[in-house]
Length: 422
Image 1 (spheres, rainbow, N blue to C red):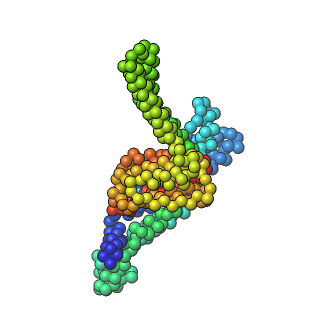
Image 2 (image 1 turned 90 degrees about the horizontal axis):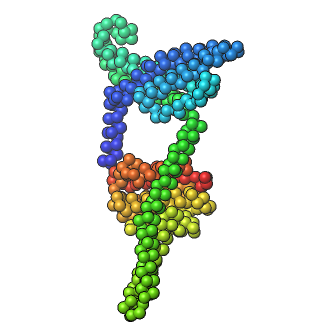
Image 3 (image 1 turned 135 degrees about the vertical axis):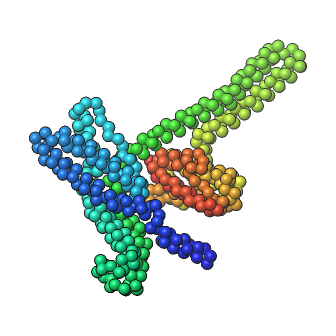
């Protein structure tokens, strides 16, 4: 009951204080400026149509190109306003790229998808602007007028209020207060179409998003390959190579001792050198085996299920494993899923103070879903350490997603979704 009462009190507090919140004033300012920006967009649309009409004689092509570039700039202004005032999360599209030369730049401008999307935005946002402005003016304006009704209750300027009617003035003032309390939520609801248009038409297009993601994935893959190569070089140089040098020296010394072995002492020294070389050889082979296993876990040769069973059995805390893989993912996806599980279980053991954890792996609809849960203290976030950021980068390389839900006090649930095949 205490938790429910606290939740109800929090909701009432949010409702009552909404008119004085900063977000409500920002959204009101956005709703009031929308008709101005929509009018500018409509005027620009007229210029675009005139330029299209002039392209019959090819004279209007430069004007049309300039109009498209101007639309890109107008879209940037609308995108900035939507971000700052309406809280719309929309990324910047890719910059306009063109080869040197007037004709190349003209062709790039005419084919600029971002500019044409901004033109379409200017065309179809006018109804959304009218609706948002009407809601803002009606709710906030009528609310303020009714709230201030007692200030002119003796005046005849308000036709619906008889002089001396205190009760009517109080009731209308209460109605004005109710309108003001509902005004921020009404404006927020009225801005929903504009938010959808801004996200759809002012951000990067589907092709641009895909291209940018592929570029980032390629850069991450290159960095990951370089880091792995440096690690292999370092391990080979500092460990295996040094042991091989020691092995060669020991065998050389043993050979010299055997060539001049006329006494039992020399034979004993040769035997000691051979024993040392034998130990170094076995340790070198073990280091090489570990190095190879680090590049590709040997347990994955038998499948992801067996590899995860081996991994969870070695965890310092009890881990329940539940897998349902009717088909086997590609080797690259198996490797990413295995390393994600390794990193997440390591974080559980080191940071969560959990007593139990679970790993659930499912395959279906072309996706491999990995869910790692623990009953620890929570508080995990991508910006709290490089481990989760590295996981997000590795998952993003194959167009996967990672969802982290870890409230303070726990529990923590981290879901990784990967395509079954790449």
